[in-house]
Figure 1 (cartoon, rainbow, N blue to C red):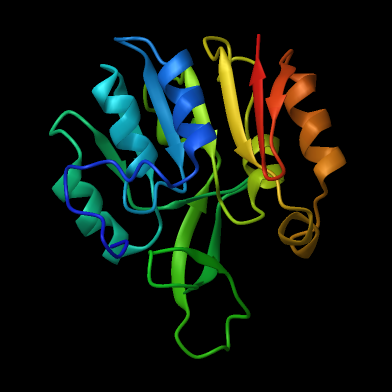
Figure 2 (figure 1 turned 180 degrees about the vertical axis):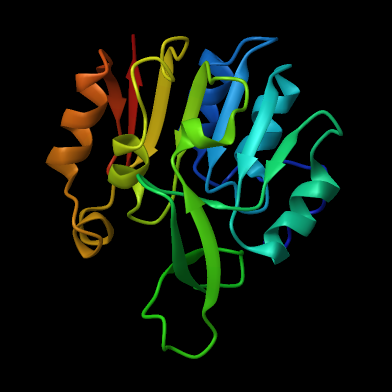
Length: 196
């Protein structure tokens, strides 16, 4: 849990631009996908707008926090998102619940199932947020036009070194999203807002 972040209270200083985009674009009744939900800050913002939250988080410790802060209607998925079914070695990276792909032999790694988004058979997203430590290209590669047919907004973290460590790039991520018909609406140094 984030230090100083009480349960059921959104930490407003955490990625304020992403929170603003969620508040602006999520509508009541939307399905909001939170890839890399961590402890649920962005999921809470969407839930407070009346969205059905589908939160993907591979770390069991973060799932405990998600269950504590999200409404009962939220769908929690304890898995990673990838382009093909796989088992990924993950390791926690910090006290806020983040994780990254590791070398399987490293101490403290956890083997986690990872799947393409359509595999889960869940309601399709209207708004999707990706903050998955460099796996964003893999997640987008696992999507299909049919899966994203109802999606109006994609908000993604873009951090070149993390993308490159997993065989992707910022250029590839932008092309993948734009290939599904989304146009860049806004960006910061680490996040992109795409709409269609």
